[in-house]
Image 1 (tube, rainbow, N blue to C red):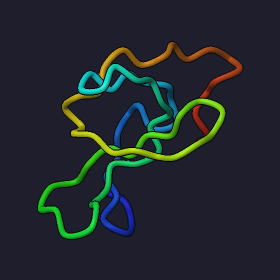
Image 2 (tube, rainbow, N blue to C red):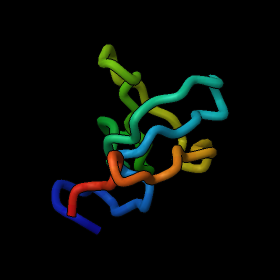
Image 3 (cartoon, rainbow, N blue to C red):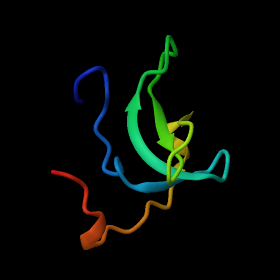
Image 4 (cartoon, rainbow, N blue to C red):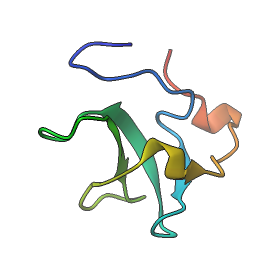
Length: 73
């Protein structure tokens, strides 16, 4: 677990599919949303736009890591 009630996840920073909506977005965080009891996944559309949330269990099909898309360490 990291600060501000954020949780670690191996796909943070990667493009993933939200199987609930069928949309793809960059996984920004797994963290609380207001007073909901469980953390949610925060996704940002590729190229920017309005973030949305989904159940972390709805995440699938992460983009492959290439030398150009290595997550920051």
